[in-house]
Amino acid sequence: MKQHEEVTFQTLANNEDIQIGYSDNDIVVVDSIQQFTEINTAHVAMNTVVICTNGKIQAQMNGIQMELHKNQVAIVPQNVTVTDVMVSPDFNLKAMFLTNRILQSFLREKMNIWNDMMYIHRHHIVTMDEDEILFYTHFYDMLTLAITKGKDYPLHTDVIQSLLRSAILGLCGRMKQMLSSETSLDNSATMHDNEKMTSKVHFQHFLDLLHSNDVKRHTVEAYASELCISPKYLTALCKKNSGKTANEWITEHVLEDIRYYLRQTDLSIKQICEKLAFPNPSFFGKYVKDHFGMTPLELRNS
Image (tube, rainbow, N blue to C red; front, side, top):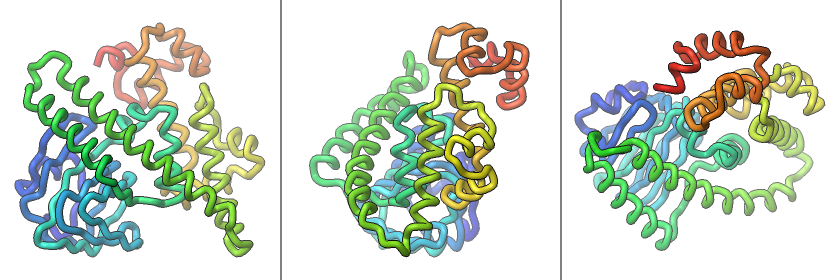
């Protein structure tokens, strides 16, 4: 890999040392890396799940030291800077790179588990036991069979995405177990940690509101008012805990709801407009056009 790299779909596809198993506009599955040299800095633009299949790797992720061994999984949110990478000579991996759009589509109401893990508790390493490794080994064999069918096979992309969704949901189940254990530890936090915990709690409550509200297109001021904090503080704590502003979180969730209802339901455009509390179909059409570059009907048929 290069000494300074922006890791995107394009750089993955163009790197001859990386063996790509599958890719589309939202997903890249990496089967292995033939050669892995040290890199000074890499900015990973996508959500990433890395399974260490052999050896070990250590690196700094946003300044935090991480070490990944065989049969461990690293879960990395989007827009993370990785530095000081060192690997053992026998290191190899399997990895999945996902856009935020497809991740939210996979997880829907369970997205809060991912967000809690990444942004609240900041756990990024999951250790698999033998049964879990066996499950994912069989799963990966099924995925490989589906990929080898080729793009001409009916519903090829849908089948592969369904398998990948199953894997992500299984991983979220493991995350939920870890978070349950962490919650009991958090209850014994000292007074010294109170301010930090308050920031995390407010952020978590904000994400909970986003996930639970059928209508997400509210102002930052409206969410802040419901949390009994100021809009400025809400934006600051979102930026501190996730690197994204409150408005960016809101917009992401609104866009994912639009995409979901247009592409995964039979609701009319007028019904979707009403369900998501847009004032009228004309305004809804302009909003979709501004953010997706196409009309609601074009997005539905894309």
